[in-house]
Length: 175
Image (tube, helix red, strand yellow):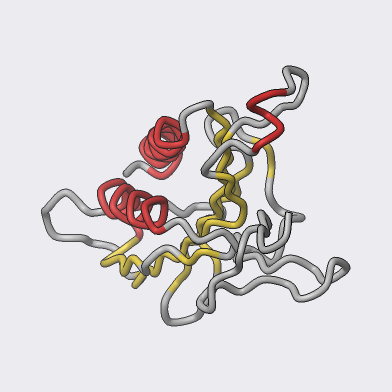
């Protein structure tokens, strides 16, 4: 149909590869140390690191590296991560000034055309997030998390993604 283009449009603020053979832009550069986890998809924690070692944590806004513009997802994940990683009062005794960076690396917020009419096409919405906590002074990674959620309802997928990350932080980092 002339004038109809159904391909997703990359935003000017998104960082995506230009060619099909370009390596995708990711937040986490070293996957070799990461292991599958029961709560989140993949994780790595620096030996001996926990929230007790932090004196403060700066949380950066979520980047959208997926190439799909969907501001609601960015806002929901930013708000959720701020709640999960905020300190619950009290003086911090640690020496590390932490920084939390996160990015949406893949996202499909809406079902496609084929999934509505073809029963064997898996056309479920999904979102994948990468989170990295760094020592702000040395840029040394302290914790890396990759988590993926696939749900029929996109908002429910975001909620479950944030719930799993919260459980992981509480159990594994003592947050």
